[in-house]
Amino acid sequence: MKRVVLNTTESTMFKSLPLLAALITAGLTPSAWAQKAINNAAALAGGVTPGDTAGYPVTLSEPGHYVLTSALTVPANKPAIVIDAPNVTLDLNGYRIAGPSICSASSKGMVACAPYHTGVGVRVNAVNVQIRNGTLVGFDHGVVSHERGVHLQDLTLSQNRMGAHLTSSWNDGGIRVERVTAMLNGEYGLYVVGPHQLHQVQAINNGAFGMAVNGSGVVFDSLATGNGHTGVHSNGTALRGVRAVDNKLNVAAGAVSMGGNMAGTTPF
Image 1 (spheres, rainbow, N blue to C red):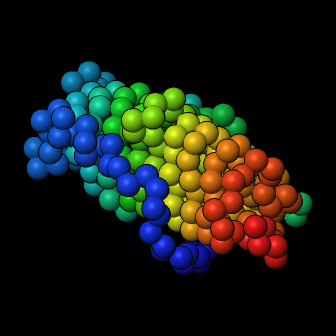
Image 2 (cartoon, rainbow, N blue to C red; image 1 turned 45 degrees about the horizontal axis):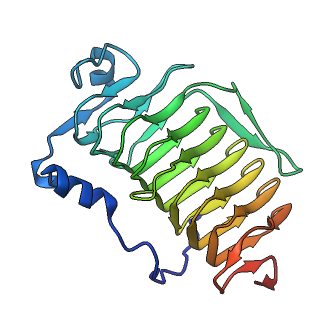
């Protein structure tokens, strides 16, 4: 599917960089990070970091910069990667991490996935984690995190039950999602609770909600289209430059408009 090019207006909100601040405070800089390769052979062998056993999941127990050097194909009911250490960058390097689930859209906008409830692409159990540059497909959840300082960037989340489930109760380093496409997921494209910033997100043809966002934050220069229930479901989130079109319900009540938004053909 052709990627929609969105307006790249700079936000005046959320200028802080909590991940960088945390690294500086800890005495860590990107040049100091260890870099390790992850590929299917390494996953099956184990030992990527201390405590990582043979087979899936790959467990990352040390801070550092990890780079995929091949696609990963993950068996049913297994996580692909579990991040247990803070200050981790996981670069998918253009590759995809694939579980066994396959989703297809019906004529009524619903999405059916089988097998259902099967594993997690990346589970985040630590603070200040960035996941970027690749595809997570065929899981129960593409990404799951209940930690602060999580940053998703340049990802495609497709054919999962939920593209990403992200929650944080922390104000000093919330959730950042940039240039992420959540497409053809069975229920939610993105489910976000807590302080957040979503920029240039596309939620397309998901079975229920394109974006469900709750808590203090902003969604800007983003698109929700073709979702089976609601394009943008918001409770207190500010929207700017958001287009919600051709969803069963384009925008649910509770969103705070900062201008430049469209619900179908109606500006708000």
